[in-house]
Image (cartoon, rainbow, N blue to C red; front, side, top):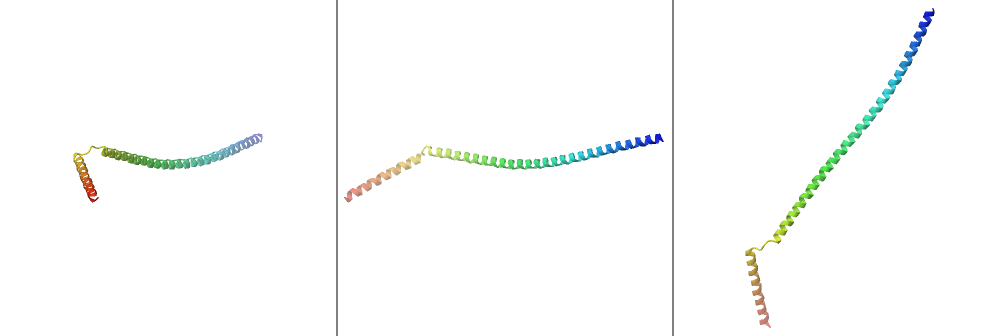
Length: 126
């Protein structure tokens, strides 16, 4: 009878320990599930942030490409303007062609003759 009572007490103690361990395990499972939810939420937030950063990178890359194209366009226009100015300067500083000098001399001569004719006409009419 005494052995039966001792076995019963041992069994009850084992059941009690088992219940306590089971309760601790359930608490640990609950804590781990809560931590898992927290980490999943954190991962979701990080994924959203990464997506936002990718969008920003894409936007900045497009802006950079546009700025690069604008710089190339301005540089091209500037080079073109400089070439035109160089060409204009060369044109203005060029030496006169012999035929142009001859034409200028002939035109001066004609103007001188015309002026003389006008003077004669004016003096003969007085």
